[in-house]
Image 1: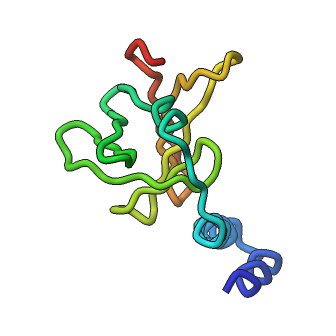
Image 2: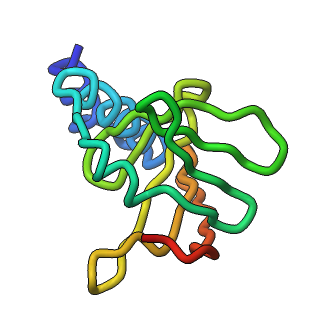
Image 3: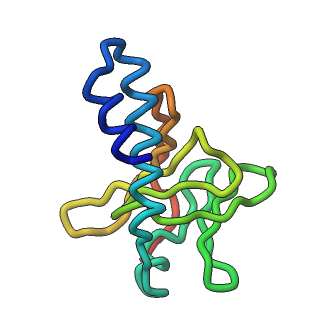
Length: 123
């Protein structure tokens, strides 16, 4: 599957189609080589970011926006996470010069992004 996707990405002429294929490729790579984070690493992301909340429960990281139901997160690679409930949305965390997580960015499959700065004390 990965080889077929790589070929399609290389041959794609339409930018939107290429972006969609690359989105799928990132998810496939994550499933081939799962990232495992320590409990301490997970805690670095915990916090409130505008209307978004990240918390750890039962050893797993979760995302909740406003009053919506929480969704479990899984790491794709450093500071990028997928959501069990959504295939077309991911979360990217940004860090400051000291390595502290300071911003949560919602990344949509179509390339849109929605950033929220951290508004709690953090770690």
